[in-house]
Length: 412
Image (tube, rainbow, N blue to C red; front, side):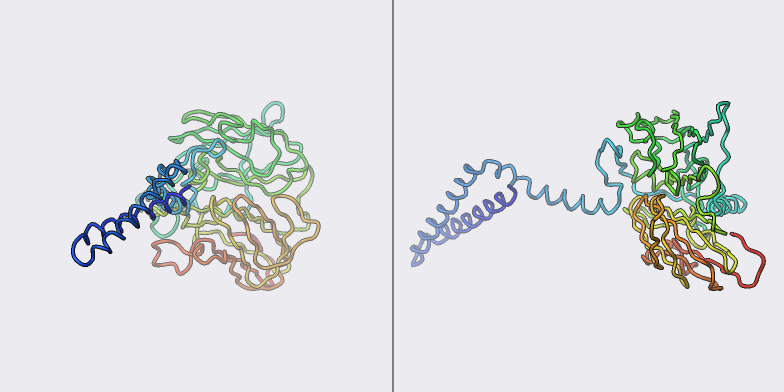
């Protein structure tokens, strides 16, 4: 209909031009040109009026063509980031705010910043939170969604959101057969929910606002309960499913690891490490422009140290709301052994692996090549820190230190 409207507008414009020409050439030797122009103009205008009668919707469309173009242009720019999501029963109401705001550079002490960096190392080392065991054996975990001042790099602190004062939230680790209860307390200024990606929980435990449950209002709580089954074994994500684009990027995300009832998922692994990839927007950016590993961009991202000859499992979780990542390990060919928590019947060899938002991938390699090896996203602007004039690299960058001829190994 907009195409018809534009055609009619064009015909009217041509008719008006001929009428204007005819009215200005009514005297002298050009009188015949004047008459021809007037007749032509009348024909064009008449054709346009007939078209409006045949296509009555074109009149309304023609009046809104310019507004529609402006709206499309605005939406295109806004959709650069997920903050432009419209009202949706599954994703909630999108915020008009863009990204997180800066906190004072002196808002955190050196000891507080070191403590946050240690949280990142604990995530990499897969140190999970300790549950409260109820009388019936249920393992109860408590997550409190709350504002937090989070240190990124240099003197940059931001006003973020997190679970239990941490970004990402604490690692939740359970095993097959566990009865699990996760209590969500909301200390945020807006409603939220909790979604567990890739596991078959009951519908009312799925965290989809207005569909699975009522959103948890500020000051409210909700209890998520499920029993861990064998199909859940593997690497999974949890995150807010209310206004997800905004709340995930604000810091409401974490990792859920499910172990077998007995033993380890990877019994042959000497080292099992976790890197959760996150993203947020600073400087009023409409899309993510700071990227983190276990909550920290390089140079504060945790680094992995292993001994030559060890078998290494690296679990990757993409908890950014918008971006794919292409994770590359220098010096090695690794095997992709699991995707979204499910083992592959035939591992895939490579040295770059792509992860979609909310996707998890486990890779394995044998550390047979001593040295300092960069592990990073191969999307180059994901390796930069905005307004950081000190660090040559940033974002999704870290190092794997493969130590030769040493009896000491570990993760640092």
